[in-house]
Length: 424
Image (tube, rainbow, N blue to C red):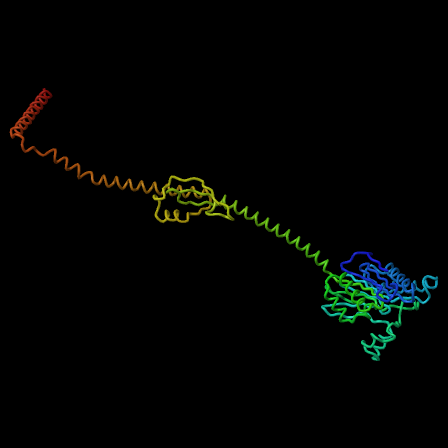
């Protein structure tokens, strides 16, 4: 009988059971109810072994704890033992019926086992397989006592004799194991129908070669049946995911948080760039030559992040050639940066004043030079006017002299007359 699906777990698993090639019916039972996994191998003859294993699986499934707890799991196995004995006393099945049991609770990276009989638990870790449980059987006692080897135990005539089983003694207690496992480990629970047909190295090879736990379980059972299948064969294969699911969830949450932080950081960078771009555009300016004139631009020369960071304010009337050579060269080459449009306008005003002053000085110098040359020209004209004409008649001068003398005589007579009149 098989049971499955009590609750979900982080582990992935596969299971398979088969009657084999010799037995008429399957006395094995299993339960797959993560985090609980159980394999029970019935004994006691026709129908009775099947009843015992089914009772054990049902009780353990109902009474097992929800999380790995060795003592609680052991208690569930003890209750299964009492339930089998009680059923036999009540006429269910047969007297003396019983079963072996290997029960496991696996959660994250913690494994607990409760085991009675010769059903086994194996763990494949880093490619190496080890048996976790100890068989409660006669041949196991003989091996521990050094009386036989493991190879001899496989063909020993009393290899099927077990020393402890559920249903035989109300005081029966399971062996309990608490084991730390790791992500990537693989757990195997099986009845002796597998372990008696395949050697440990063969089991380990199959466990390590098939990544899918269900196919791995089927391959193990098929191999045991192919080698004779003298007994019922039951297998559960469980992959340990451990904390992988939680780690993946944490990584996902971390990735989302990181993505959000990056988006926020990018938004902050873009906002800062936009602010810086706006600040530069509104608080910076420069002067540059444009078509032979001084032009005022707001912003900074060139591009910022592929965007133009400047805007033409105006082209002034100041000719670059009218400026000092050093200033003119700077304007032509890289421009002159200033603190803003107002500062640019002030600088242009300075250029205009400088040009105006220089032109005024040049005009004054030219006027002074012209004034300095003026007296020499006027003296030349006066000499030319007062010089007598060489060709004029001489008596003209005499006439002039006579006229002057007459004037003088008249003036003297007038003077005397005025004086006489005054005296009288």
